[in-house]
Figure 1 (cartoon, rainbow, N blue to C red):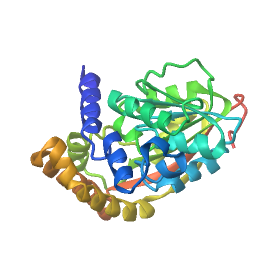
Figure 2: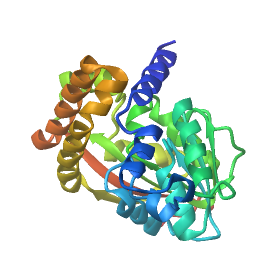
Figure 3: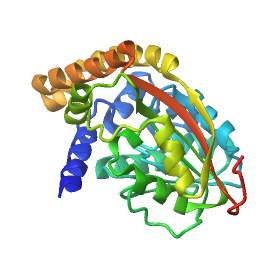
Figure 4: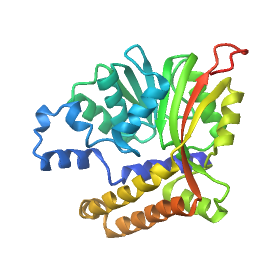
Length: 288
């Protein structure tokens, strides 16, 4: 029951997110783009709803060794920006899953719009119960999404299960630090639907239990601190559209929540890491 309530909260959070399929299309039109002829080269400048844009996608691709022979699973894919970008640039096949039905529907339409529906597919699914056979994927990716998911042990187990032996998981996540207070955790869960914030050490233990090894863990906290200030300004620039869609009270509530979130990077209560994890090929495989 508790998890069901959290699932509903996450879906509502993204159903009312400032960045949406319609916001992307409206921005394209304001920039003079013919929607009927839009290409992925153009769309990728508008649909990357994660920290660092396409350069962050390239960082994950380089870590995981993504190429045209890979089948990639994008967990918590949102509107599908990274999935489309990876398929377009690296020639891989990508399957995206997300909990929020409106995001998945938008991802499907945007992908068809740029003609990538033959290599990029999406479905609505819970990351704690992935609808795939064991060993389906060469690579699993995710960006700043695991912070929304309860039961990290189950999440890690499902991601590892979906990987082929020797497969890689490349992901970023918002992490707690030694300074994170209980009050901050409670407020972030209530206002941002962050639950069971992970840590670098906890992820290492969890992946090891699933026959995987953390090969690299890159601290990106300083990089994100700057990015988040710019994102807050970007969200505030969308005030008119947000108020029109959801009302002024919603904008104020969202602005207060995101401002608090950004400030926790200044206080050192939150951090960010980029991980490369490898599923071992055998019990004796060190994973590196």
